[in-house]
Structure formats: structure tokens, C-alpha cells
Length: 634
Image (cartoon, rainbow, N blue to C red; front, side):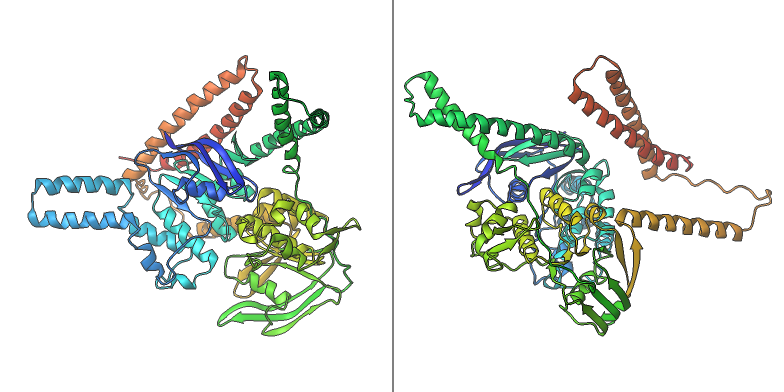
């Protein structure tokens, strides 16, 4: 079933065209990611799909009767309301339906048998089914609790940006819409919450279209990638790893075409300079072809990648020492006697749940706040570069180039040369036309990239990055990872992006709460595996101890009656059998095709990817089926 159809939509802002004549569809069960560089129009496209913004041309059509849920990148709530008032407001269609159903039930109880009321109640019951409204209150409390909301009397105005995002996500998921549209869903979530959301969205009955830069999230959740590239849309049937492979092949081919066009352009430019008179069909056709060629050759600058080549200040033998540092906020301890001596070249990641004090730790290092007890001593040669979550508070009426010139007009590079502010902006993918635009015309991601530039051009030798991956596109993240791999100074990073952490850090500070901070040598995935292994060992030990403590049967006691499957479990049991049978049929069909005379490489690749996906699904469903099969049924 096709949930969403998009046909020939275009959008421009003034002279800037974001995209033209885009078309795609989302079918039931699709998990699709939309990928593009910052400023390409991802958020604008999402807003067009939800009707919050108009397209210049084209149409957006949703299947009749489906419910669509939208998670905005920046949620907009009434700051004067409480959390409870917000979630139970007039916009909540589920609660309105529950109220209408209860009113009809009450009326029917009073009038006993009224055919008209009975008909209305039957219709209301159907709507309750469609909205999954029967256990809504239970699910709402459970979801809010999972996202960390217990006090529903808390004012919206007192919530942080991260809390607002989590509240918006909780309200969206509890409604269980048929189609989810998610704009950067992992921003401001801590890693455990991201991993929970990842598992939740992998469920086979969820259909979604999302914008995200989280590469592990993309790889594990999505089965389709839509790439918005140079104003055109490319569809990749597969996960993120498959997309990377195919997009790289395409970019190499495009680069070769552009190079060829550039060489041919020289010849055609000479011909144009001789002032051809477009009197014949042949010469007019050649003139038209010249302008097409010129446009293709001009794409060379668009394909340029961000270049981070910063010369860091010399770093002395003494870097940073933290001695017996204590810090609390009220009765909540952040650090309790923390001691550490930083050394040159260390790459440390900081992980822990939201609210345990990771950003406070960074502010203690940079003297943004003072410890309650203990000392933080920086070396004489240390120059901090601190990229904060809040970002730079730009004067948005200023031109982009003026923002940079206020910091430095000439910037030294790592290769020993210097560059002007304009040249550095070009290296950060701000071409000259953008440099003379006002800051307010930049997208959210472009502002974050500009902020990153202002941090790095100060040539820091101790780089501190607090959630640097929020709103940055994949191209910028790759460039930042490459830069960090060659960076000689100290590095301290707080990030929820597990892929990014795996690439750039080799040890961790793990904030466990209540002032406890533990060290770990390795990246995040290695830490996660070690933690899970420890948990498995503890569970095995507990099970062994419990088994020893349980009196053994002498064989004379009657066997306990096996538990029965509930009605819901029985339905799931039967559904799993049907689904596994269908997957086996599809698997057999694919194997027959692959064993035949198929020569289409692209089709073979698609079929092989689907075969792997089917095998994974069969393993997952078989495991569930076996668990249910162990439970008896009358």
C-alpha cells in the first residue's frame, strides 16, 4: 500500500533553487532516510510534506485514512503551559475521541436502547480501534516515564532544548501514527535513549521517513535511502552501507563527466568567442549545447569537499591537571574528588545519561564555572577551542564573511601557508556568493558549520567538542573525523553519535551519576561490549546462585501445569507462522532467480540484499515463535 506520493515538487527562495521536480513514494513498511548536505532543503522538504510550507509546484498525496505524525527539528510548544496541559490539549485527537466515546456510552446507559445512539457508539468504537485508544492512558504514562518525564506539573518554559525534543518525540510515538516523519530524531537524546529508539523503529509494522546524520542509526533502521544531491533525488534500495558504496561510485562518475566537460568547454569557448551567428539550426544547436556544457562544468565547485587544515598552537609538557575536584548543584553531586592529569595527544570521549554533568565537566575545564573544592590547573601554552551545544550567538544581520573577519582576516594553515577569511570560508563550503549573505539566510546546519569554523581558526591545541554532530551533514562529519585523525593536540568530546565516537576517541570518561566517573580504555563500541559482557556474567552468576538456593525436586511432585498463551499471544503466534511462510516463499523465489541466467548486476545486488534481509527477518521471527511455542494453549 502506498502511504505517500510526491510528484514534481519544486522550491526556491529568491534566486536560490533548493530542488526541482522531485518525485518519490513511501510504501507501507518502508523505513526511508533523506540525506543531503546542509542547506540542500531537507527540513524544507519535510515541512512541505506536512503542509507547514507550500511548494512552488507539484503535489503531495497521502493515502486516504492514514494518520501522519511529524517530529520537527525545533518543537514549538506554549511555554506557559505545564507538561500535563500540553499533552492533554485540544490538539490531542485521541483524548478527544476517548471523551466522545465515554459520553456516548453514558448516554446509552441512560436511554437503554436507542438505535441511533447504538449506531453512533459503533462508529465511535471503530474510531477508537483505528486510533489505538483503548490503553492510551497507560501507554502515555509509560512513554513519558521512558523519556524522563515524571512531574507533569513542570512548565514547558523551564525545559531545555533537549527535553522539549524528547517530549515531542514521546507525544508522537504514543499516538502510534501510520506514517512517521522525523527530522533529526536523535538530536539531544543520550545514547541509551537512541538505542531504545533504534530498536523501537526497527519493528516491521512501522513506516517512516526521517532526516538524520546518525550513521549507525541509518544502517540499522533504514531499508531505503533518498539522497538529495545537486537538486536531484537519487533512490538507493538498501541500508546506509549500500548507499555509501553506490553514491561513491556515482560521484566518481560525475566527477569524470565534469572533468571531461571542463576540457571540452575550452574548445567551445574559443568557438563562441568568434561570435557565431546563430542563423543555422546546426550553429544554434551548438550554442545551446555550449551553455549546457558550461553549467555542467560549473558543478566542479559544488562537488568540492570541506577542507580542515588548521595549524594548532605548540603544546608544552604541562597540559591540564584536575586535583580532587568536587562539584554539586544543590544535593546533586557531579564530581566527587575527580583526579586526572591530561597528556599531549589524548583523545577522550565523555559518555553518560543526560543530566549527569557532562557539560558541567567541560565548563569546569574551561573555567566557565568554578569547582566547589579542588583545583583545575591549565598549562601556560594551552589554547582552548570550545564548541558548545548552545552554539555561537550570531548577529544574524551580519554578513557571513564579516563574522569570520571579526576573529581573524588572515589564518595560518597546517601546511605552513596562510589564507584569507574568504579563502577559509570557501574551504568550509561557503562559496563567495554565500559569504556576502546575511547569517539569517543560512540553514541550521550551515550555521553550525560556520560556528565550527570560528572555533578552529583560533588554532586551539586543546579541542573540546560538546555534541558536535548535531545538525552537521555527513560530509562535514567525515571531514571533521579526518581532521581529528591528524590533530596533534588534546581532544575531549561529548557526543551521542556512536559512530563518530568510535572513529575519533581511544578512551572514555564514563559518568555514572552521583559524582562517579570511571575510565575505560577503548572506543564506545568496545565499552558497550565490555559492559554487556559484564552484565551477562552477573546475570549468569545470579541464576546459578538462585538455582543452588532452590530446593531440588525428588521427582514425586506433580509437574506444574504449563502456562497458557493469552488471546493476544495466540494471534501473534499465528501471525508469525503466516509471515514466516510468506518469507520462505519469497526466499525460494529469489534463490531460483539467482541460480538462473540473471546477468543484470544491479538486479543481482538488489536481490542479494533482499535475501540477506529475509534471512535476518526469519531468524528474528523464528526466535519469537519458539518463545511463544513453549507456552501451552488450550
